[in-house]
Image (tube, rainbow, N blue to C red; front, top):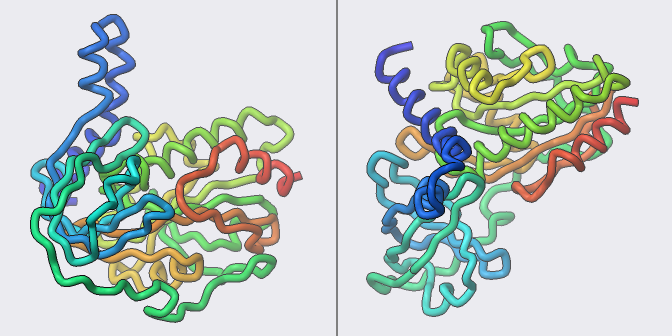
Length: 299
């Protein structure tokens, strides 16, 4: 891995874990802790999607210096009043607030009105083959964090949870949250002696160009992963044809944006025969509830 890749990885790793430093400053004043717990960035871009029911706005935004490349990204809106007067095609400004656990937009405002364009429903854009609950997943071959080829059938006899990430993801409520959830989930499962040897976790990177085995291993180490029960894998082919096909089966979509990705979130639970039990959409799930489901399947 080249020096540039190592520098990028180090920067992203620092972003993912810098917030944890606030724990070490518990003796400091409230003002100092607040400054570490929350950082903000100015954001400008064009609105490409609005879902006021879910309080999400999708913006093709400019690069945020020292934080995130220009990309298309969905953002949470906590105050529904901010949607007023906003339409697809508008150029907007906002403040991106990033805490240790989530991110959202504040102060959303129109900078320039654009031509209103109706968004095309996602289901009309492209029909994709989706995996069905109760059916086995295709026995794909991945490469893991130590460079070994692994197949889904290698884990037969174990209940599994798998999720999708890419290691350079900068937002705490996207890939970072998925990996934090898996870190907690691994600990919960490991604390149940009766489940020993009956479960496995799989984090699948959809960035096979950058996330080669050394990067995946370093990423796993950053989360304190026990690699005997938690693998970090990607496509052996850096072009990523298998990963795209596999990800689309869960309804995961991702679009490369100059070294980063605009993507949604999917987590899946598999039974001991490798059959799909459940697909969880988004990030609103807890390690405790997934641990309970994995435990039931493992037994």
